[in-house]
Length: 332
Image (tube, rainbow, N blue to C red; front, side, top):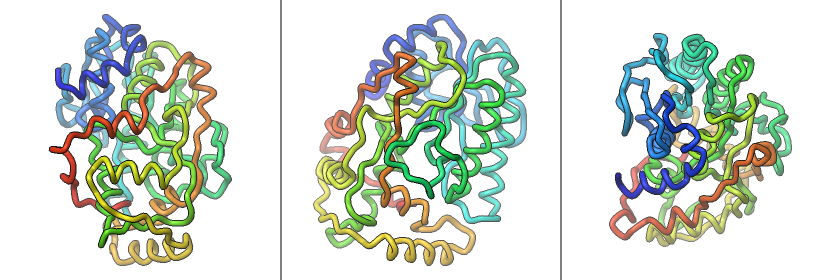
């Protein structure tokens, strides 16, 4: 068991132990979030099965193409559905169609196969309407007006899951060991010693992947059906958090503020230039950084869940060998 597995196992705590002896299916276990959930479940004593196109880091692999077929859930006691198509595809593109096939029709197939088994469906705070105030977002916040296909398809998929009596988790901006998207994409936007951020400093909820894994296993062990926000215990001041990320990765850069209107104009231009592909900058990305987005955790806390992991905990684990080795992905 490597260091990342030890950290995830520690985060799972009593939640994973309550699944001891059960057979838990974790979809999407070959990915970032699903892999952490699968490891934590095994550390808690569960037997894990990983339906998906690729094997997970632990447990039995059962091939499943979510866009095309029913999963094999024979002998499974509870399902944690982390599999999802992610990104920011252009409207009408093949990538958008594939995203719908995975996130919506794939959910239909999963729920049909699950039958009466408990299901935990990992959604996203991207389902929340960005046109409304998000200084404190509760689970009854409107779920319309999403800015991209990811938000729209997650909203449609979770609606099916809620109607079927599943537990739905809504994390925001998940980071942690193995993250190849959130923090690497942010860091890759440093240009000439500067990082442009849209608008003034704002509070933002972030979710450590260990906190998400802990919530997923706790929910699988018996949370009441319905939707729950999942995030770190307190929101972060955007600029201060970004400075800590830069410092932890050994990146020297000044934060400069770009007027939100200018950032949105640049995003629209990037979307047009993408010509059906994924843009270098999107209006969704600008929105996620330019406005306060703080998740109310009252409902999840009422189930006895407490998030323990923080951004500083994660940054403290980054050794010199891992600093500066950043994928060249755009922020999107």
